[in-house]
Image (cartoon, rainbow, N blue to C red):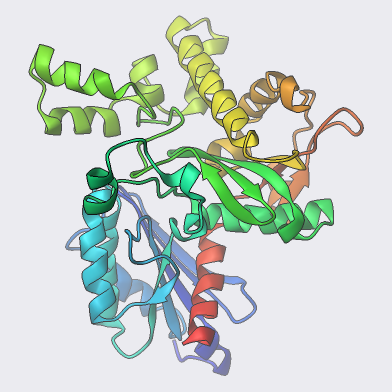
Length: 378
């Protein structure tokens, strides 16, 4: 396809996960031109998949890459050059499921598109200014300073997008809001936002800490890991593999890490599904309430992510249990079409309590926006 004049403003977004690759091209007006989803981990075929996609679309002017972890030295979205690429490699052990496949995609895209800028957009950047009380673990100085053990926080691109959409819904300035945002999907976390800035979050050094997730355990007693090693002879690799891939909702139910499956199974009397969902809701309520403790007041509770966006049963059960925060159940259920058209909706019953907002997931759009901003700053 011959690129039109507007193609010079197109941004290609590459969102590589541990088991998928999402390719999206946005036009100058931020509208989506084309997309391609590969539900398999990035690998040797990634270069060909990108080449095939690029052959059918206008040539992009820049590429935005989602990187889950920026490590201690990459704290804002930034152009990728040799030194930055090396720092990304250093950060890879902090998120071994996510960063290595993303770097494979970075390298493939830079090989195919060497003459345009590539921008790394970090999920950790939103939390770069966490106060020390929130990011420090209570461990010796050597661990904190020499080893770099601290809380980083994740889902920052989702939080940035959700905060802006919530501000629109409430007709308030984002920089004046005190909100708790719950990103509930394959990975789950909650974040306290005070005056537009992250002041606390449930994920930690890695995306494994915090809420119960689809296949990840979330927080467990660290002493339990030592016990598993000493008492049962489990290796660090076995523990990591189990906590990352065979725990969470899947581990609790024994059948599925998908809340949609579990809601259906619960309705049919499946006790394991009922127990898994109960533990998930309990974990979310505990995490949301903990985040609210970092705020002066609660302007809104915000749901986003695949579960937060399209699982009304889960939203309802969480809100019903959060009356201590002034949140109530009885939520409305916008259709997928309505939510996609509006971008966000207030779903609480008027006059019943703190506002509850649901936001259509927008990480890909946020990457495109951050890529454009990074180019302006250079």
